Amino acid sequence: MLAVLLITVLFVALSIYFFFRAEKLQHSLLRLNRETSNKLKENTALTKSIALIASYHEEFAKSRLQKLLTNKEQCSGNIELIKPLINNYAIIFSECLKEKGKLPVATKKCFENQGAHDYKEFVNKVIKNDEKIQRLWSSNNIVGFISLVEALLVKYESVETDNVSIQSTLKSSEDYKS
Image (cartoon, rainbow, N blue to C red):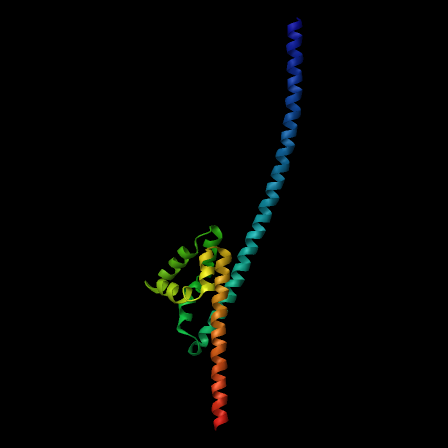
């Protein structure tokens, strides 16, 4: 009889212990589910924000490229080489965002649609000629890509500005001679 009573008390004690343990785990699980839900909402909002920022930056880069291309007679021939890079901005951006080390691979895929030798020409004439641009290209990540596009646009915009100022100086000196 004493053995049955001890087994019953032990069973009741274990039941009470496991009941409170299960309640504690259930509260923990509910808290973690709430946190997960909040993190998913935050993640979705951040993803949408990044996509929006990328699309605005892409539109801005394309408009700057278009402006440079309209003044083509004043620009160097290398401006045509960066056109596939900027026109495929969204694709390269998303590939770089997914994984580090995808910049050359994604860029090469985009250039293959243009022509067989365009990628090699782009690397040789645009990337390897400028140490700063080469460093940005070698960074091989999303920040490097964004900075690379900006540096290329600034470089060609400054070339255009220099060409315009040289032409205006030449024109004013011709006017002065007359």
